[in-house]
Image 1 (cartoon, rainbow, N blue to C red):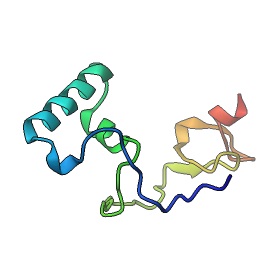
Image 2: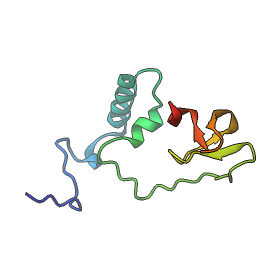
Image 3: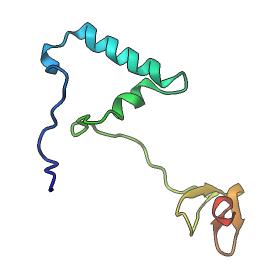
Length: 97
């Protein structure tokens, strides 16, 4: 059976416009408490299933590769020179293991 992923998702809980602000805050606090101390509540909020992130914009500054860094030919990640395992093949320690 084909699934139409463009259709809006329906939930079993009442409409969000009918919920009080206090109830939403309490549910958010409960969800953050369930994640433990090491989890960031903001990250948990973004990871919710059905979250609409279409209006979100990610702004970060990308730096070019520095003189003391290299790109691994196996994993294509940029590492510091201290992680270089094979200088001839330009392979990091993680990929060489």
